[in-house]
Image 1 (cartoon, rainbow, N blue to C red):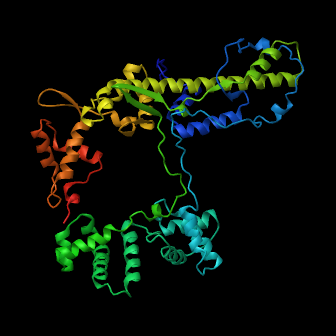
Image 2: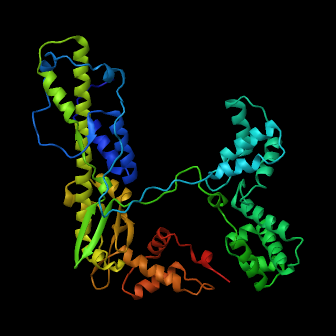
Length: 488
């Protein structure tokens, strides 16, 4: 039997403007410039420059829109909503270093491969397959997809029938290109391709010692890769019947190889990340000052001519349908420009409130640059102080950088958990991580410290931390387990 009932729920819905503001908040400084340029091109009611003094109110009610306009030719605006406008952004402060993202000069990685491929004697079908395979390589130079999947894609999306063997033959050709290791399907194959290239080069040269080291390296990668990856060195020396010195020389050859050959071929198809600071922090006479990068604080305003247009023609006598449409167009553009200017201002306000609160909380660190001066701080601490949602603070912390006298850091760097020492003092987990890092750097690499031993070291310094917490901190710092840190 069905029952009807009423239920009251409180739902929080974001307006389109709030959603757009959240997106703007995450946009990096350089991308913000592009976003502003895009808006300037699309909206003739928006322009660069400081806002003039407030004049007459822009908003008119629906009855006002029925009033007539003096004669004005709006045709060009109705026909083309994006006329040519000055779009260059000149918002650089005098003290802000010009840090544009560097564009790659010359050919991209894939273009270099295509150029080499064209020098091989291939028929049209092989050239097409080669170009397709090169397009499938990732930025590290690997072919991650199975050949069978590529065969199926060619059949279904391009109506091209090809055998797996044909693809394999072309892939072998690609694997002869520079840099060595490109076109590999796994790390093991990538390293083997490079070792074999070196063996081919050295085979006719009288350098027996180096040649022998490369042969051992090839055998290790070919037949004992699992033991190599787990650093089970005694097993390798036993199975290959070689000395520890021979193994050390072979491993030295492997360390010279490039696990990501795509990174060595010049600029890849993607843009190289280049950090542009969102904030600049300086220390003068033990006083902290933080400012917004001027690229984050552009001068934008609503076009005075559009304001005049709106005021003059909205208060006129009745007019034609086309002029009413033109008035609607102008009002829409002014409303959009007003919202965008307000959104940029709100973005700047949110950024400055967040960074100022972080700097005040971590004042000791920003004065000294010593990581041990970092205080425990979580997103909730900052969100409560600036009276904003944790999600808003998270967006800022995860996407914004501050330039300091000690380097440029992502804001989330300054957030950490709280730990209590034997003396009852609250300290940041960053301080504990720093001690862990120092201990690992100073350890005997032939007998690296286990997580249990690292925990004992921390306990002796007054930090009582479980072994699993030690493991968590070690992994967060990108440090391997003891077994994988072992060296001969």
